[in-house]
Image (cartoon, rainbow, N blue to C red; front, side):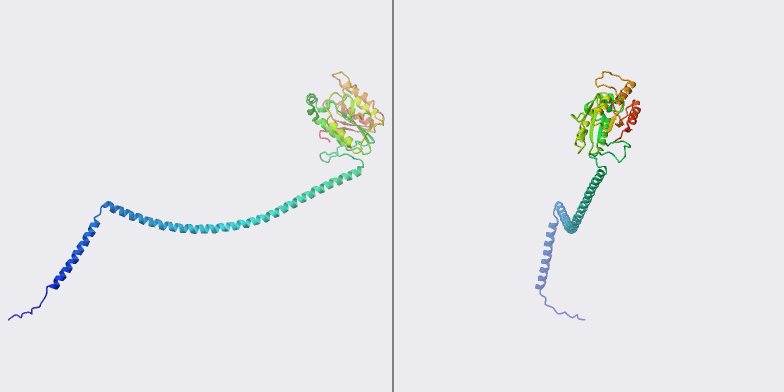
Length: 363
């Protein structure tokens, strides 16, 4: 069978050529671009490592920057909270200051009230003392001096301290330096200041001070001290009665007596002879003594005296006392002089006076 012949199509090569050229151009462009990328990728390893390191460092710095921003925000928030807390504390402090100021004012007012009350109490106490002293003065009607002792003990019973003419005889011999013989010997060789501070002597002066505070205002007095001889405490007043008056002469006598130093022996003969020298005779004699006499004349040269001789000196002196003159004896016992107590007790008994052995804490 005869085969059909196909129709012959007209095909021009110009279109295919264009397509081939375009495709080839694309391939060529691709190859050129790929060649450029390859060349850039083929850079040295050192530069690649440095680039990578810088990229990581930039990344870390960016992270740190974010952390720093977050930290700053936290700090800002904390600062705001701190400022708020400070403001509250300041307000609280101001409140406390105001409360303290108010409290201080109240405390000062309380202190002022307490001080005023104390002042009122002291004033009332002084007024009470003044009224009591006035009452006591009105009751006695004659006390011109005061004497302050310890406590409110009633020290004397039966001792007459009044009278119109009162004579005090106080022993100022060396034996008044102490109650013990060994201490008397020691103190006798010490300074004037030490002698004046002797406890026994100060006690005797305090006794005279106490006695003088009891003198009636209208009475007259005289104070003699005696050792080897008797002499008035106030110079120039020999044989003269002194007015008690306002107590100035008594104060001066006590002041002088405090500066008198106990020394030398004991001549009680000259002391009792004073009673006869005064005119009129005293109606009350108060004798402050510690032992029997050691002499009967002012200028004796004897060093040692026996007990019997001392007792004889005492009785010889006692014979000088006029009848009707009471002698009140205040004895400051001395170690070893046992007969003195009996002798002076008998003296007080015979004359109608009183006798007292003084304790260490009187007056």
